[in-house]
Length: 343
Image 1 (cartoon, one colour):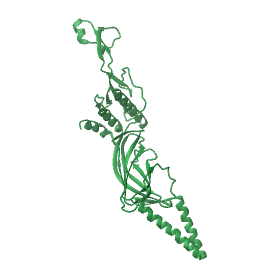
Image 2 (image 1 turned 135 degrees about the horizontal axis):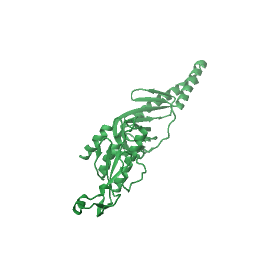
Image 3 (image 1 turned 60 degrees about the vertical axis):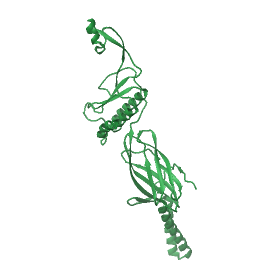
């Protein structure tokens, strides 16, 4: 019989839970009803002295024992390993490669539900689990678990929770398999308006500076021409001011200014504003680099990532933005890009 996997709906809450170090036993609604039935049969057998009721009571108790033994055997020697993608984007589903092994030599496992458990600070979207109906002895099952990170930052996996309601559904036995795995979630990429005309302002968030135009011709200075357009070398030769007329090249250079400090309090902005600014900067960098433009990222404390337009450069910017402003990620955000760039 072939094993197969599918998504399971959310299970109802258990009636009662008994926890140990790495395992727990949950009593389901069906199990609670069966236990009440056992007590009722037991009370009836004691007060009536009926042998038939004692036989029914013994059968019910044996079902509880069999249920506990079979569920324990179903979870025995089940191991799970995972492979996370090196980087993902917040809000985008990504695939986690799972390798599930039944290490038992002769016994199969049934009705296994495997749930990915992330660190609480960076939760995943719902339905981060899979279901295996049947695993043959010494069988290795490889499958992909589709999950989604809800926000940026380091995504750390604490382990997996393997559970089963086999054989009767009276109890749900759960076993925790610890694991240390980690990936980095890039900021959410949102639709943004790509700039085509040069703007400049170092005080506003999300404003883009543009440079690198090609000089086409020189002409006489006219009132209103910007001073930085004056071609001083030619003006010195002719004795009159001459300005440059430029034509934008097919690919431009942009500097993104990221300001995370409140001007009034001189402290970091609120979390909602922080995430909005980081997402805007990431979206601009993503779209500009994919268009072929060169992008540099600069912060208010003079930290700067130089110009570039390669996929590695985009990853460097995204790695910085994934951790910037987080309480445990600011230092890594500044050190990691440079280190990775020289590997």
